[in-house]
Amino acid sequence: MQNSLKKFFSFTKKELNGLLVFCLLLMLVLTVPMVASWFQPPEVYHHEQFKKEIAQFRASERSGAPGYSKIREVVEGEVSSPVYFRFDPNNLPEASWQKLGLSVRQIRVIKNYEAKGGKFWKKEDLKRIYSISEDDYRRLEPYIEIPGKEFDKGAFYRKNERNFSSPGHFTVMVELNSADSALLETIKGVGPVLASRIMKYRERLGGFYRKEQLAEVYGIDSVRYSSIEGQVEVNASSVVKLNVNTASFDDLKRHPYLTYKQMNAIIQYRKQHGPYTGIQDLQKIAILNDEILRKIAPYLIF
Image (cartoon, rainbow, N blue to C red; front, side, top):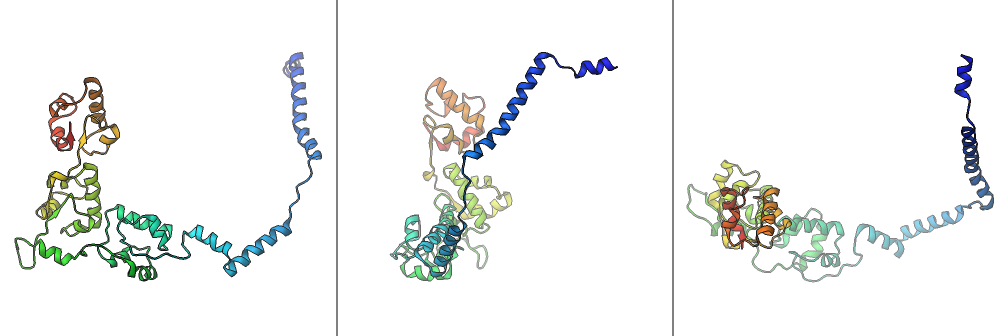
């Protein structure tokens, strides 16, 4: 037993040399920082100077000094002295909104509203933007000029009144490819959320070529479609088409009718066999069945 313990705790000459080198390296690592600190002067903190700078900043904040005003302008995105001019709020550039004294946050809300299909038909519509305060609207209102006739929902309904089925009931005809969100909301059964979905789906398609495609929009089931189909019409000539011989994968990717495998097959077949001459060439691709070809044909040019 004693011999076993002695053998277990004994070291060879190589092991002892290695242990010695390790101890020397460890001592070197520990002593180098201590030696280096002897040659480096200690860092001195000037607390008094820092206190003076804080006092100057607080004083400038209370007095509204130019330095503080500049900081506030950068942080809040405000313009200290607005420049007024007559303007149409529809698609007004961001730089022009800034000149009028609006902050970056306010401009962002306006642009998001426009991106969703929103439009200003009359001056008062600007007040619907939640980030625009009453004060902002009052100072901007005298300079707002919206060309053309202001949108009158009552006049729109009267103009499109057809086939009264009961007293006070009429049908509104809306052209799906040209209507903005305000016009889509005049359709009975379509609210702001559904109008936004219709516009987004229309953009992905490139436009509707028949009104039955509305049933493909999320939220429009067969019952709802039946209630609105008589209120809409489609001008198929405004459909945006894709050139299947030059379209990239990203161009095809936006279309809701094609899967990734089908898009890839279209591109690979074009690379191997050359340009398509017509829909009959696409029929040679096995994973494109007749139903898919019927749906995408109105959106393709060769």
